[in-house]
Length: 556
Image (cartoon, rainbow, N blue to C red; front, side):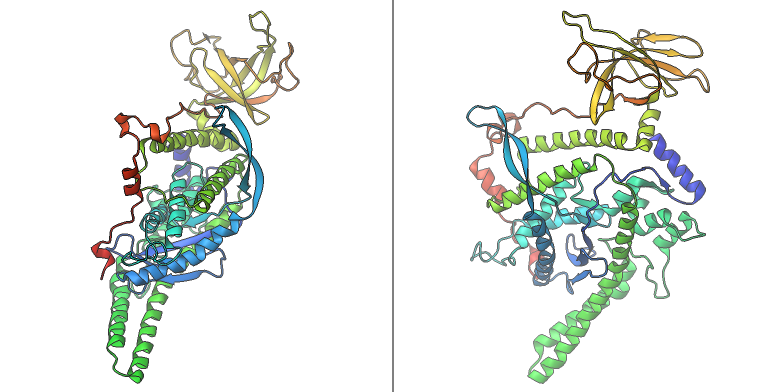
């Protein structure tokens, strides 16, 4: 946890209200997101109990599994879910725009630009908490290898149509959620806690009701009191007034309300199956319908408060202006969505259970690169985030007090002006350290020359003292940092206008790079060395794509 976050949490405790830790919104929020509030059955890993899903605040669709141990009812739930999610995804797949992409020419091996289609927008799936993201990934894994009767007429217990396709899309959303900065699948608690700091722990922030109680408490109340009420307050019937954000349910709800309702449903279904004539069957069907209606009402009573809380959180997020680099990250999400759309249309097999060595290494490298890029972009977009980096010694800001013309010592001298900045920060600058500033949206690099304390005149030239420049000599002591500008000044002998800071300008240099470099090129999957499992053969590929075996949990 950074010093800024710690200070913000302490201030939240003192004031009784969550503190803003971002001046802009660092994640994309779609104008038409698909909100998904799932519930799971206690003791049945991945067994859905019900969900509220939809794109309209006032018109959610309620999906319920009256008996979660019944495979047919679970498949009916997944079919209904596919009927909602797949049309939503398809609504973004047809609207495309021309774009350029750099690819390797198979004949020449050179990098060339090709014209391709890019989806103009992409779907966004929102769940209440981090556990909801894991449930989406689990659903995707359990569905994408299922076989339908059309795909394999002899398969036992075939899945309904479109269920495997929904599993592939949910898997893609779940994998994309692991990429830092991605917005295709997001948990609202993660979004809110990124922009507000509360006086409770990160684990407690995963309770959506408690988190919103800190961010937007009722007038005249304190966040801690309202958060405690959101977590523990119960009504006269012993049920929580603010149910957890799911997908887990409250044990008191399971034992006192849900279990008896499901038992009544089972008895009514058994009586209907044992009915001997049409009149008795009509009566038993009425009992079954009433029992199912009771289960649906219970599921809705647990999901509707969370549904309303998700939309309230979205209102709070939309009030923040969007960060400058958010659109760039959303464009990468659009590329990801377009690429998976093309793979599905091309009839490629579903994602394997286990990645080969090259794919796994590429995923890891991508996530590391995107995390570094996200950290840099958030600091460049937001003065509050940059303040945290400055406190950590990773950046410094101040006023330019002197600019000296200088040139490189080469056959064709190039401008290398010396810029001196007065700052109150204490950056960790070593010998000939590189620093960067944003110039017209592009990083301009410079090299550290020396740092001089204003009140003592003690200089640290090129880190000759063997230590980083950090620490101070007293309150109000300023530091004069001199850097040599290295690039982005044009090709002429004199720097282009505006490319070099002028005396009196306020500028900020960072010790971290603004753009991340790509790593070493990995071999193609078929060239995987024996030390990493060797090339994935046909047998391994067939095994990876084989559908899940039928287990005892699939059969009543």
